[in-house]
Amino acid sequence: MKEEYDFTNAEQGKFYKPIEELDIPIYLDKDVRKFFFENMKVRDGSFSLNEIVNSLIN
Image (cartoon, rainbow, N blue to C red; front, top):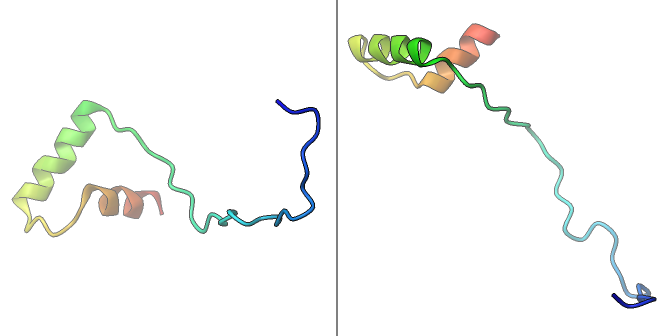
């Protein structure tokens, strides 16, 4: 590394992008995941596992 760096033409926050929504993974047990997938197949299958779990949490 250099002892000193020149930041006179630097632009602060040039590559910064705010996080609008934080996605936190939720891990389900194998049996629970299997239960949801089997019930989604019985119905029309228009729901995703993500939508179902989010509706249960809310």
